[in-house]
Length: 193
Image (cartoon, rainbow, N blue to C red; front, top):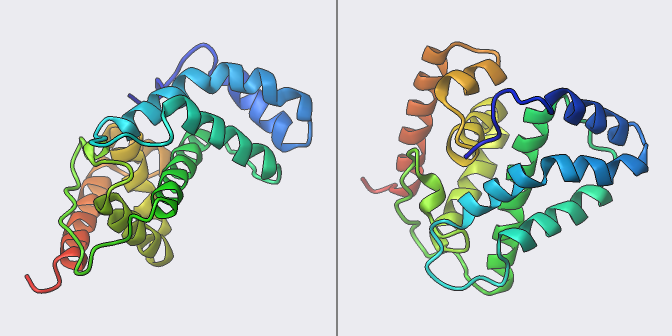
């Protein structure tokens, strides 16, 4: 479940993000107290499809994210949605790195990765997630906006309307772009089809 579109703490989270990005190290504690429940929900969604035990669990993943964020103090956040979007991307990257460390290499020829509302049901450390991660990295190089739409819609669980609002586009454009991305992913994962 994504963070609520608007909650009473939205303004406070944005203020803390700006203070922390501006160099106020003392705000990281209060900031994480505010965002921890939402980050744990995102991490839990990433683990929902786990078929095998993973060295990391949602709490550990959020802790790893925390360590990454405090190392990258130069990050600038526009607002809480930007923060959660980047956090979801970083958590995905942590899981992929963990899978690579455990020796789960991409299978030759790729695998079919469904791109639908329940994308989080893919085992976070599976070859499917490694394939998807590789393709999302490629998509980001080609079209960062479409990659962000995928992350918002399928990893963070925002509606098409919320995604459109965040990327400052119409819902019809988001729907069309995501349809294109699904076709592009299918083609890249199934080159002989």
